[in-house]
Image (cartoon, rainbow, N blue to C red; front, side):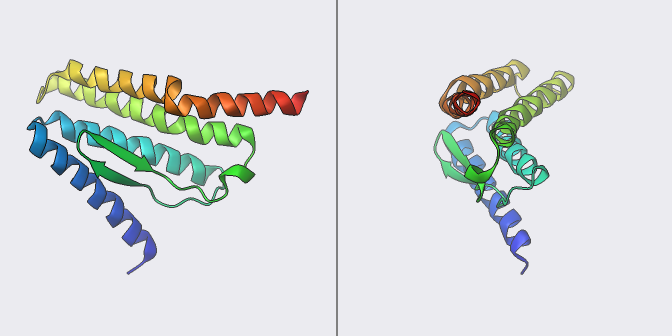
Length: 150
């Protein structure tokens, strides 16, 4: 079997496992939409890295109860310019927010779950990634740029 097919199968299997674990615990269809946002987030990093010529593996998700940890491994990340690294880092949360907003608009048409719950997912995506844990990476890259200019 081709390694790309294996990698895509791993992404799908880990995503399904994440959704199944959390749906079993919470019994709420919102879990499936959160899973889609998480997949979009990781694929945002993946496609931005590909577009910028980075060596990247297809992402996968570590399925845990109440939280999924997405991992997109970029082999030559430190060798990339700070502008390219920032682009790759910002593309994940941006893809996640856009996916959440598209699903929100679709849920306004046919509400399977409360559409406004998905706005909280988009807000969490922004707060956690731009301000929270990944925000440190963005600020660190900015400081590296400033030190290079000096």
